[in-house]
Image (tube, rainbow, N blue to C red):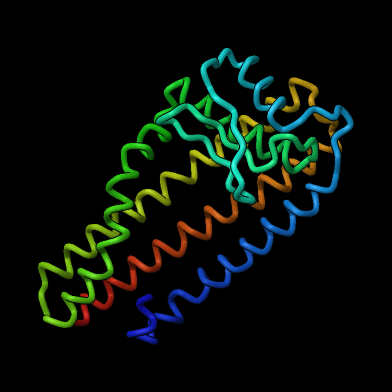
Amino acid sequence: MLWLFYPETLMLLLPALILALYASYKVRSTYAKYLQVPTQRRVTAAQVAEEILTRAGVSGVRIEGTPRTLGDHYDPRTKSLRLSAPNSYSVAAVGVAAHEAGHAIQHAQGYAPLAVRSAVVPVANFGSQLAFPLFFIGLIFRSEPLLNAGIILFSAAVLFTLITLPVEFNASRRAVAALQQSGLVTQEELGGVKEVLSAAALTYVAAAAMAALQLLSMLLIARRR
C-alpha cells in the first residue's frame, strides 16, 4: 500500500477505504439476513438458474457448487456457473443464482463489456502483481522508466475494475427482470433480491474507487519525485 511509505496519500485513499469496509459489511450482513428468508415457491438456487437459462434459450452451462461463501461466479472459459448455496431456496441464494445466470446469458449473447473484461483479465492479473514492485523499485533508484512501467501495468488493473461495473449492473438487471417475468419469486421477495444485489454491486463500486485513487496516488508521487 502506498500510504505505508507515503502517509500523505492516506487522506486521498481514506474515503475509498471507508467505502470498501462498509461495502464488505453491507454485502455480508444483507446476504446473511436474506439467507434465512425462504421463498414461497421453494425452488432451489440451482433450479432457478437452470430455469432462467432455459427461458433465455441458453444451453450447455454446467451448474456446480463451490465451498466458498459468496464465491458464486460464472466462468465463461468453461461455461460453468458455480453457486455457494445451490440447494438453498432462500431469497439471497435465489437472487445470487439469478445474477450469475445473467452473466451466462451475457456470454451466450456476446455482451460486449463481458467480452472486453474477459480479454483484459490476463493483463490485469499480470499488472496487479508487478505494478507496485516496479513502481517502488523505480522510486528507490529514481528510474522514470520503471515508475512509468508500474503506472501503466496498474492502469490495466484499474481498467478491469471499471469495465466490471457495467457487466455486474447489467447482470443484476437481467436477474431482476428474469425473476419477475418467470414468477419464481413474489414481489416482496423481489425486494429482498434487489437489496442483496445492490449490496453486492457496492463492493464493485468500492473496488473501482480504491483502484482509481491508488492510480492517482502513484501519478502524484511519480510527479513529485
